[in-house]
Image (cartoon, rainbow, N blue to C red; front, side, top):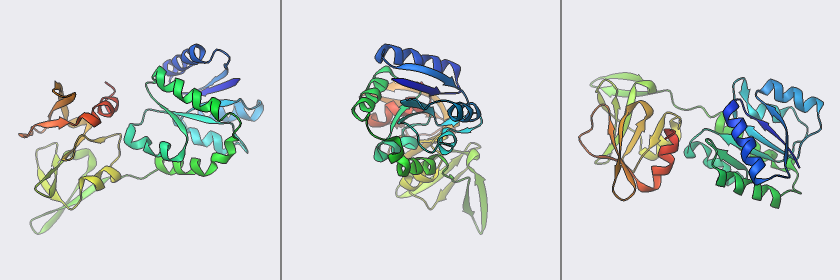
Length: 251
């Protein structure tokens, strides 16, 4: 078995190679590529491997760009630093992924799935690949328009610290301490905000990375947050979201 790793982070590429050596000693990593350009050049002049480990976001573009240049491609295990919200489409589309930092057990499961489907032609995943491209090229909301008296004011998402649901109303809280009601639900915000910058921690709160000031352990495997601007109500990460919240903040 021959594999190629496309990863622009040297440490991540080395770790992945080491884990592959431990879990699949019969699999030879024949190339480490670190960009769309190097990947495109390599595949144009070499025989395709049996498996590709492909980082989705590279310094000079998307890993998808490499696959677009191939008439046919072998099975792909994607790697990504995106959080669970951003990668939820993978499971529905039947493609394997590894969430960075890569966990050995996750890689083991991905390799087992690859072995079970080893006779499957990678080109049959073309439709699924298009879904993934749409997912990662998705345009997220950049600003919100709120009503202030008889006027309207625009806020860029970078100015927003968090969103809170209270008595059926959603309010946005700015880093400067301003509060305004908006006509969205938390579910809608989860779909239109970039998951790199915002995370829904429970049914009431969606917080930005910059708003998280302190993180404390809380009973029942939850986390208690101190966010800025200061919120009088306890801000608790629900138990089912704690693991993904830690990944989101790279804890």
